[in-house]
Amino acid sequence: MIRPPIPPLPQLESLSILGGRLDSSDFLASLPNLRKLRLECDFETFPVGFEKLDRLEEISIWGARSLLSLPEQLGRMPSLKKIRLDGCGVQHLPKSVTDREDLHVSMR
Image (cartoon, rainbow, N blue to C red; front, side, top):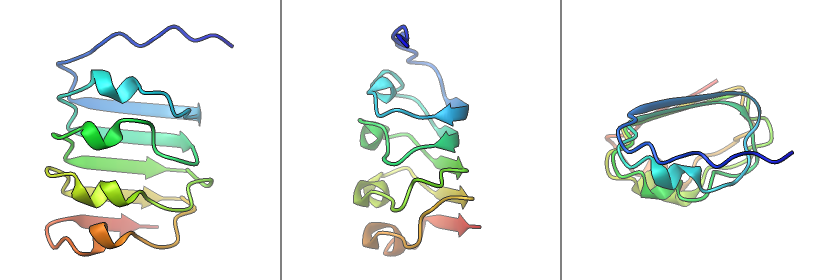
Protein backbone atom coordinates (compact mmCIF):
# COMPACT_ATOMS: atom_id res chain seq x y z
CA MET A 1 0.00 0.00 0.00
CA ILE A 2 1.38 3.41 -0.97
CA ARG A 3 0.78 6.13 1.59
CA PRO A 4 1.02 9.81 0.76
CA PRO A 5 3.65 11.72 2.75
CA ILE A 6 2.47 13.60 5.81
CA PRO A 7 2.85 17.34 5.17
CA PRO A 8 4.84 19.43 7.68
CA LEU A 9 2.65 20.46 10.62
CA PRO A 10 4.86 22.88 12.57
CA GLN A 11 2.06 24.16 14.87
CA LEU A 12 0.74 20.74 15.93
CA GLU A 13 1.15 20.22 19.69
CA SER A 14 -0.75 16.97 20.27
CA LEU A 15 -0.96 13.84 18.12
CA SER A 16 -2.77 10.52 18.60
CA ILE A 17 -2.15 7.57 16.32
CA LEU A 18 -4.73 4.84 16.81
CA GLY A 19 -4.98 1.32 15.43
CA GLY A 20 -2.92 -0.80 13.11
CA ARG A 21 0.85 -0.86 13.08
CA LEU A 22 3.22 2.06 13.26
CA ASP A 23 6.02 1.98 10.73
CA SER A 24 9.41 3.54 11.32
CA SER A 25 9.09 6.41 8.85
CA ASP A 26 10.47 9.83 9.69
CA PHE A 27 7.17 11.76 9.87
CA LEU A 28 8.01 13.08 13.36
CA ALA A 29 10.64 15.40 11.89
CA SER A 30 7.82 17.60 10.58
CA LEU A 31 6.33 18.11 14.09
CA PRO A 32 8.83 20.36 15.94
CA ASN A 33 6.28 21.74 18.45
CA LEU A 34 4.75 18.42 19.48
CA ARG A 35 4.16 18.30 23.24
CA LYS A 36 1.93 15.22 23.62
CA LEU A 37 2.18 11.98 21.67
CA ARG A 38 -0.26 9.11 22.09
CA LEU A 39 0.48 5.87 20.25
CA GLU A 40 -2.30 3.31 20.49
CA CYS A 41 -0.95 0.79 18.02
CA ASP A 42 1.58 -2.00 17.78
CA PHE A 43 5.21 -1.35 16.86
CA GLU A 44 8.64 -2.81 17.57
CA THR A 45 10.85 0.28 17.53
CA PHE A 46 10.32 3.99 17.93
CA PRO A 47 9.87 6.01 14.73
CA VAL A 48 12.96 7.64 13.26
CA GLY A 49 13.55 11.15 14.59
CA PHE A 50 11.53 10.91 17.82
CA GLU A 51 14.57 12.06 19.81
CA LYS A 52 14.45 15.39 17.95
CA LEU A 53 11.11 16.30 19.56
CA ASP A 54 12.72 18.75 22.00
CA ARG A 55 9.34 20.01 23.26
CA LEU A 56 7.73 16.61 23.88
CA GLU A 57 6.43 16.55 27.46
CA GLU A 58 4.29 13.43 27.50
CA ILE A 59 4.19 10.14 25.64
CA SER A 60 1.50 7.48 26.10
CA ILE A 61 1.86 4.08 24.49
CA TRP A 62 -1.03 1.60 24.52
CA GLY A 63 -1.10 -1.92 23.12
CA ALA A 64 2.42 -2.05 21.67
CA ARG A 65 2.95 -5.71 22.52
CA SER A 66 5.87 -5.96 20.07
CA LEU A 67 7.74 -3.15 21.84
CA LEU A 68 10.14 -4.99 24.13
CA SER A 69 12.33 -2.08 25.23
CA LEU A 70 12.43 1.69 25.25
CA PRO A 71 15.30 3.50 23.55
CA GLU A 72 18.01 5.04 25.73
CA GLN A 73 17.45 8.40 23.99
CA LEU A 74 14.00 8.68 25.57
CA GLY A 75 15.49 9.59 28.95
CA ARG A 76 17.63 12.27 27.34
CA MET A 77 14.73 14.27 25.93
CA PRO A 78 14.90 17.58 27.83
CA SER A 79 11.18 18.39 28.13
CA LEU A 80 9.83 14.88 28.67
CA LYS A 81 8.08 14.63 32.05
CA LYS A 82 5.65 11.71 31.68
CA ILE A 83 5.74 8.26 30.09
CA ARG A 84 2.72 5.98 30.26
CA LEU A 85 2.93 2.37 29.06
CA ASP A 86 -0.24 0.29 28.99
CA GLY A 87 -0.42 -3.20 27.51
CA CYS A 88 3.09 -3.02 26.11
CA GLY A 89 5.78 -5.69 25.91
CA VAL A 90 8.34 -3.52 27.72
CA GLN A 91 9.83 -5.39 30.67
CA HIS A 92 12.43 -2.89 31.91
CA LEU A 93 13.31 0.76 31.52
CA PRO A 94 16.61 2.14 30.23
CA LYS A 95 19.01 3.71 32.72
CA SER A 96 18.52 7.17 31.19
CA VAL A 97 14.83 6.97 32.18
CA THR A 98 15.27 5.52 35.67
CA ASP A 99 18.01 8.03 36.53
CA ARG A 100 15.71 11.02 36.00
CA GLU A 101 13.87 12.11 39.14
CA ASP A 102 11.70 14.56 37.18
CA LEU A 103 10.33 11.89 34.81
CA HIS A 104 7.15 10.08 35.93
CA VAL A 105 6.70 6.60 34.44
CA SER A 106 3.64 4.38 34.80
CA MET A 107 3.47 0.83 33.47
CA ARG A 108 0.46 -1.48 33.42
